[in-house]
Amino acid sequence: MHHGTAPTGLQQHFIGQRQRLRDAAQRILGCPHRADDVVQDAYLKIGEVQEQESGAIRQPQAYLMRIVRNLAIDRHRRCRFESDVFADEEAGEDIHEEAHGPEAIAISRQTLALVSRALDGLPARTRRAFELYRLTGLSQREIAAELGISVTLVNFLIRDALASCRQCLALASSR
Image (cartoon, rainbow, N blue to C red; front, side, top):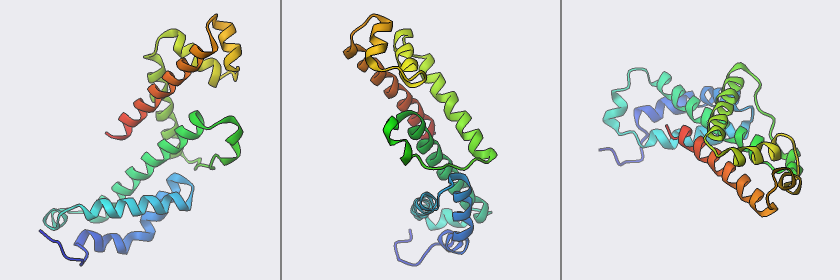
């Protein structure tokens, strides 16, 4: 087992490919700062690969690119979902501009499908409260009047729906 400070073969490949890997992450994320974070995370991740495992990787460039792309896609999903679903209305100016390429569109569709699946699994009243709040922009008081329930209950229903969406996305990104 290698415990020294000399980089493994995989880390040497990484160092040589760093700019290319960063560019790939930036294409997915549309943000240089997030791309830097992903590249840093990838370097830490490959640091966990043992020297003997590192030598068994036949195509290190492809392997490294796959790690960076997967991490960038996960980061994109998380950021996009949080921007779209969890951002407060008044914080709209803080939402980052995301990439608009085919990959970003596919990721957004996957995220939407996951959220839709999470909402489909909720009780009808919970789903309705969430949809009225997030999709039509009604206030919690207006939703309470519409559904004939208390404002406090509306708040709990919306919170439950958000928790369900977060859980569904967390499970998907951990696979």
